Picture 1 (tube, rainbow, N blue to C red):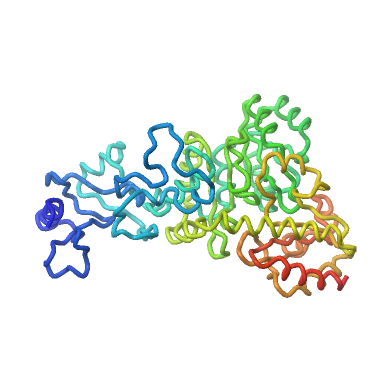
Picture 2: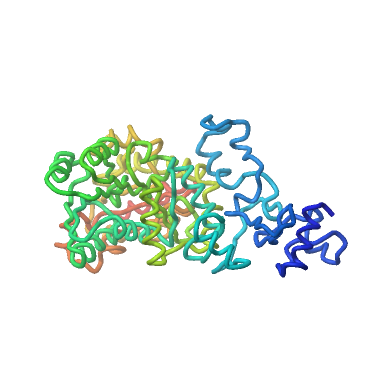
Length: 473
């Protein structure tokens, strides 16, 4: 048995630790590897045998070996591999071996709390001299790997994941917008975000919200110069009309006037667009969609500077909307194929938009990859691909449009987007059925609007199916 293994075993018997390391031939050989590696809940003896802690700060920190992605590079040097596809697979997870028990996948640390050997160690943790975790609401090793990977993909200093995209958005607004504050947002956005701004920030916190068209730069400049605006918040692309703000220009206007620029990049992902590199201060996303990519987990994240993200984290610690470790595992698994899935969904989205634009039963197509889209130039300048969501208006009323929805065979009639299966919906019915025609008209929701979220199926199959459905109009 190695010296470290012997001291670990001695620590178990002498210091009352869990049997996390076992000597060869002890009768527990089947449970423990011959190399005497320590599990996440490691024994309290270090190599010196003096009882110091050897617990890792996160799953990904359990080995001192350099990452193959970064090996051979000094401080400030470019990593050996720098592409979104490689990053999606390896970042934050491949940092040498052994990781716990040489597991290739990041393990799920399914615990609600963490223990300390004595009061002195707990005080060291509280004072930041001992790296560990205290309680599941404040951190988890599996969750932390998610945050590290997303931070790499978004080119951010820090990332915070949460239980859903909506939780991320609301927690961010509560953390950063003061009572009686002022924000600027855009007309085309996710309904629940609009509801939170109007019904909670507006009525309960007396926050003023200036709502502008996504392309209204003059209106934005006026709002910023005439008011003490805390932040500007917009999706890009937006939901459901896929409007794309001019991120560099908007970011500069905000920066010059002391406001934060926050971009919801759910419809783009960091594979297609990196808002922080374009000048934004923060990027948020519903990881439920493309990032996880399999319609089996709810999650969200915010990324940006550590100073600002830490403010949001403090609020999340209070509110409690944290990500579950198993959800973190599913998100990590999904992100490994992110670039592959996005490539197919970009292709399906573009081809579908082009085919729909030429179809006689379609009045207008909303897709930033088309030259006819009002924000095509913005999208072309700041996106690598245009995404898999296509919105279009058929030449018919509410019920004729519903007939198209009911006639498709491949897509599921369901809300959401970004998964491997194609989804189709009529926003009037899915999201706005509780509002009358006049209310829907005020926010631009038309009865003839269809949103099609492309999966990774063969495009010819998707188009053949949608074509026969359009023939019913």
